[in-house]
Every structure is written in C-alpha cells, then in structure tokens.
Amino acid sequence: MGDSVGDGADHPAGAVRRRTRDRRGRGMRGPGVVPVDPGTPALRTARQRFDQLVLDVVTPLDEKWQRHLGLVEYAVEDTPMLPDDWGDETVPLSSLVRGKGQAPTRLVLFRRPIEHRSTTRDELEALVHTVVVEQLAELLDLTPGQVDERYEDG
Image (cartoon, rainbow, N blue to C red; front, top):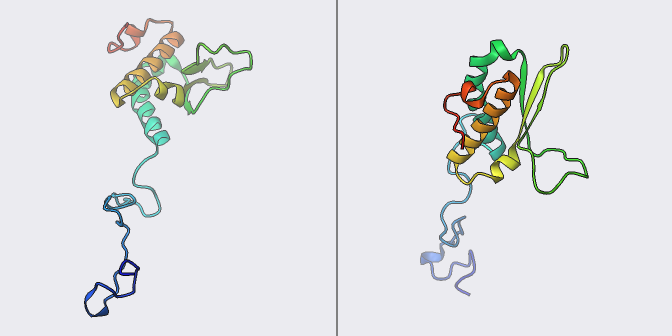
C-alpha cells in the first residue's frame, strides 16, 4: 500500500505525497507558451496560419496589380463544394468568379486540398503562390511569369 496517494507511507514524518501532472515522466502537459493577450490562444490554429500565409502572398501581388484588377475579394474556404457528378480524379485548389456590375471579383483558395498536396511549409507557401499567380494571370489575361517574375513554369 506504499503507492497510494496521501497515505504517508514511505515518506518522512507522515508527509503527504502529491501527484503532479508529470506522473509518467513525459514532461509538462499543456501549452508551453503564455498568451500575449489574456483570453486568446498563444498558438494559432492551422486555419489561422494558412489565412496568414495567403495574406502574405496576396498582399504584394494585389498592391502591384490593383490598378488593373479593380476590386477583388480574396477568401479561404476549407474545401470546395463539388456537385455529385464531379469526377474523382481532380479536386480544385481555387475558384475564380469574375465580378459583374457592382459585385467584386472573388478568388477563393481551398485550404485542405492545398495542404494535402504539401509536405513542408516551403512547399505550402510555393503552392499558394503558384495558385494565386495563375488565377491573377487569368484575370489580367497575362502569363503567370508576367504577373510575378518569381513564378516558375514547372
């Protein structure tokens, strides 16, 4: 019975042994980062990291081409809504809907299909960049290389 908690056995002068959260020697449990703003998580979710990546890629391209593009809304959705008769061989990585009248053009990137095709952060960033540049090139009726000189054809 020396292993029971709080019975005082195997401890000097009847001291109570308290279990800690590190019962099995695996280290501290829970986040090791204290949030900057109380009430907000210190570590961002995968969705938040992807949104920030898209923002980092889109911002300089939109600033460069904004005069030619007009109003463009950029959005991120987890997955595309595919019709029942869609083939299994392909899944779109983005969607581009040209604006009409007062409605802005809308470029939507699909997070899960893009993440599924990337194994590292660098690959993810490169794929997001490629998708955005190709869609903007289609909007501008230019080649992707003309939209951004960093675009690689292969």
